[in-house]
Image (cartoon, rainbow, N blue to C red):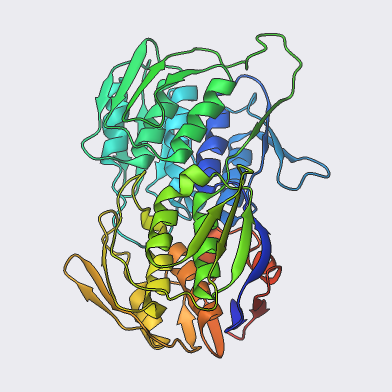
Length: 436
């Protein structure tokens, strides 16, 4: 049993660096199964979801090696992968395990994995994923109630129209279609930065994917992915995962909630536009540097923070993964704020925990109402899920007194060295072992 302990009330000041994007890494790592040459992946975040992905790859027969002197870089070769069954225990630990279905289907024509696990923030149906696979010529069966198997004698390009905008289904459709015969068109595709990152990675390795980042993606099947240098090359291909927009957004809100002054490096400001807009509406000062990968967030002594309304929606709208963090800031801002959650139906479990710290939030039929102006105080709280845990950290940093956060394994699913990074900008925070 481990927990985070935070002594709050200290403004965060200094510089902090953002790691590679969790949501990119957990798709790009399975995508290496489609390659016909080894590849080196840089800027891989050191988080538990990545550790599970790497364990799955090794279990399938891939060679995975951390590069000497480069702790965030891995060399992966899938030349000897023959297995198509994702180990049950690992699949149940993370949502993104379903990306191995698309990647293995594209590689082997068969794949089997348990239904996805991860945080409990709502139902995780994979009907749109299976619809995409079936459009390409695959069939699926259930082994019991919890393991799905997909198979195809061959995959053929087709038009896939998503009934709803789904990041996971869009990425899985890309993975399955990359080596299919002919042309695949994904309509009503999700547009998130990690979808663009996956497409850029596969294109870098020789695929033909156009339109990623728009709602129509066109994939021309490429039977062999040998990288741009072609067959017989001895090049060590290197690809770097994009910065994590949600980690960056979390640091932005933490700086604002503590009335600090933080320079955040290694970001893509365009990916943060929806977050930046809401922070500015709340009275937070956000300055984008002339350097493209730097953003500064600060609150001056006389600045008044005030409420704003939020509705989550797919990119480029306000991200659901930033909703709990922003709600925490709004509890201490002046005035009333309204939050509508349109992505995950069970995203408000953190409200009970924030109330322990003095927040005034009421859950409504379609969201939550925040009465601002609260004076947060330390308490023992639970990290209900990954982003709820991030909200508890922000609340603890802004509160007076000591906050203890338990179930931190959820936080470590998606934040690389969160304690070390925050301590580097003045947080009084530590990770300790607690008694059972």
